[in-house]
Length: 397
Ligand code: ADP
Image 1 (cartoon, rainbow, N blue to C red):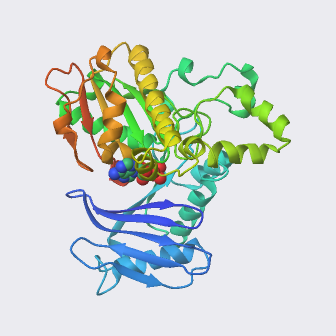
Image 2 (image 1 turned 30 degrees about the vertical axis):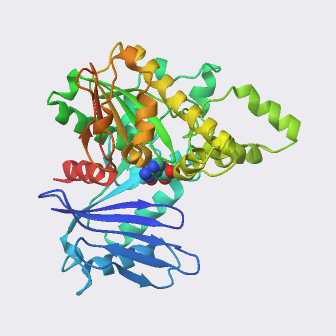
């Protein structure tokens, strides 16, 4: 069975076609600048040159038509006809409280997705546009929505309720939702396989450290707590996001700088984090390079980043009363030995110790725990597309 996975942004669209008989990626690609001048599709198939199509694309429907054309292209494609696509899995950022699992899309689901727009005004609309475009082009193909928030719907109330007047939760849905759920779910399932135990018997802490970063306590296979909250702004220090902050800082700065809520939001989401502290870049590689060249605020930015990750790990070990494995994933977690070393440095009291000689690599699955580490430490490259395809397969087969 072949499954198409679609991750639709406001002006871009990522896709993968997977053959679920062996979970192999047949083709993957990116459509950029949808609705803007200079639209372009780039498709990669292993062992072949990149296939690039430059063509004006007025909207997402035209973009998805181009994806289908590229997949069935006689010379550059990987399938003979669209009929080979058995189902489509869509990444959807916010499922609110309604969706704790992936779901087959029908009209009632579309209605519910539209109701979640107020919770994710930037992300859900392009996801919905992508689904609508696919449904129009492939009316007989089953489609599944896989939510970034779904995995975290198992959190207990003490993890997700803010200490605000309770009616603000009831009336406005102000609570912690958590994000990156598809990644945390995939990585924790894979970690259980590496340990060789049932995930229901394990306590795991998953560090998804990329430009956006979050950390999740996975207890008995379920998300027990996670660092992102009502929005992806809460929690760790990120490329451009502040993470945790005294909320009084927000009102104080709005008054001092005489700025609007949108301007404050922009500072917190786009100008803070590693970029804000270092003043240099939001890209961790740039900041590491500058630190090595003696830039003090770059060192400070990274020190704060690592310290916050360590504090979260400690608090999640306390929250679960134990930990069997700590897992690193995403851009930094997979590719930065320095980050993994700095984070684990000082966690000896929790029984977490890595073997330095095993840690010096990028981008592959590995056990990096020291022989005398009580806790396993793994690097597991995340694969959200595969998780989406697995969920899609399970629902449609
Ligand atoms: P997102 O999906 O949130 O945009 P990614 O998971 O792709 O982010 O991670 C991107 C981040 O990973 C970049 O900011 C980059 O700094 C960091 N990164 C990637 N490779 C390395 C590396 N070799 N060393 C340090 N940081 C890296």
